[in-house]
Length: 227
Length: 227
DNA sequence: ACAAATTTAGACAGGGTTGTCCAATTCGTC
DNA sequence: GACGAATTGGACAACCCTGTCTAAATTTGT
Image (cartoon, rainbow over all chains, first blue to last red; front, top):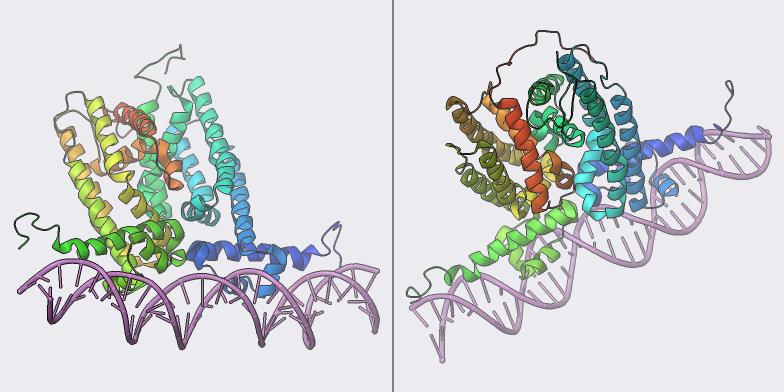
């Protein structure tokens, strides 16, 4: 029954699969009920395993919670970097390209299951585990903001935008693009595809109105003249 | 009797003052520990009353929680409307006036004790009490957004700004002004005065760059790209 | 088919919480 | 000073949850 080359899949088949199943169920329950309100029996039931198996794999409610956060952080970061890689460095239609990028980012990273879960856990339990969320902050926003800022800096250098501080511009881009989804996010809801598109469209238009290489505030250095 | 000296500070002292004290302590504990993790003994201790008094006043953990949310919503709304009343309708220096307004809004409504507590309760428990938070949504954002949008519409009508949709502009103003405080808010922290000022300054500058004398409203006609 | 490892169900102790009841005490008022 | 209402502290039962343990059942590799 061994298909092809499976160097280390002997135990993990039912072993590792159950571990993942437990972490997934735990993420769902922790988000729904909060850390204190989550009970292991429910997590076990939702994962389709016995309570003892949960303890065998993760030892502890707190350790399980940590595993959940690390797992979500890792997956979310991977998704964000993958999406940033699709940033329109050589835009054809700058507005359309940035809108499409913003929609991708929201659909694949911010609004999907992992993104919503991670955000909720950070909001609800962030203060209780300072070191854990300090780690998230470094690995997550700390690096993704920089990566996004670098892309905007490149757009500016190529003459498409007039940006004074790329870090500020990147944060404002995110803020604008999500401006109309704030309340939905706050309640943990999932915006419709149409809401995401509308917010992104309005946000990108305002962003471009402010940053398109034509005016305004302080143009410190020589930049390529806009067409 | 006591009508001479303190008209109303003595009688409510024991009864109503304790009620308020309980609600305040409950807000703090619910935020710190989450609904499930909050225990009535701690709330009572923090309020300086006995546990029985908590039950006498509010009857139930759930009723107490509801009272806390309603209380916070009411106070926050009052503060927001009071601050919106200070919107610069006849600006002298538009940029400076809008920055000052944004700082006021953040300091007095968004970052103060009530604002942070309410935001955290909504984020953490919003899904568990749909009707309660639907009410908050109507009374709160539903009305404050409109009020703010009306002020921006007036600015536009007076020729200071060029705004297509005042509701969108109001939301984007808020988003821009808070752009650099997102992570602090997410972790329930309190930004420094300087951070608030910097975020407001950067946000208002971008906002004005986009909305001052903008004639390029609808340039686009291209299709919205799929992902 | 056999043996080792894993999973399961259930029982269980220890700890903690909610909400009630009650007697004693304090507080505000007449 | 005395009366009534509110408050207090403590005891209390019912319940829930965590984490451990055990013996039986199941899976997995050889």
